[in-house]
Image 1 (cartoon, rainbow, N blue to C red):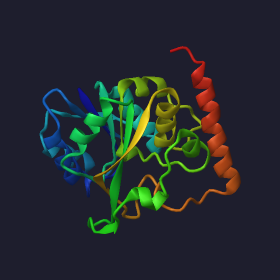
Image 2: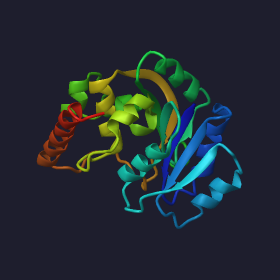
Image 3: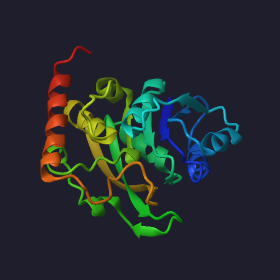
Image 4: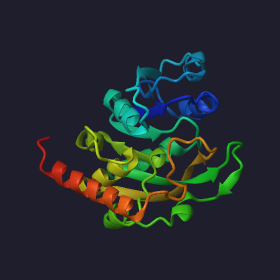
Length: 236
């Protein structure tokens, strides 16, 4: 069973297009779990208009945090394989098939994607090139995070080890990628399986220049490292 975990907040402009790119790739028994953090626009109306039994809406934490909203979606997911999903991107038609093939060999897979603007016009052919992607768990922990959540899928064992999220983590994908890399197995694949929409109102800023000071960047990395160390000895 596949669970697509989507965190939403006022995403009505793009969410229908995103869902229509995902649903043809799923089978009966799979699900899309939408954790909505109190949207005040037409987000939920757009979702409900599809009248799809695979889509399940759950109430979000309503704390204005995409980290907590994704954590809530993962807590409600029932699948053996979990895909993280943003509300405003577009999946390529082979995303699920390619990533599921990789998940037969590793616990977590991260794909490349095309970076596009609000109208899906290409800004960069490769997210990997934008972030100067480097493989290796120590690089991604200590130097630069290349784990983009909306390009990640993982087995349930990763989610079970990652939950609950430590309160100190800056973003959900940083935590999940490091949990997969240090406790299980993670692979970057070159396939560009999604159009990653950047429109100026995104909840995540992974592809944008960081506005954190050097001290803040160091603190974020140390917090993740400390949380990994604590999780290493936590009772499972």
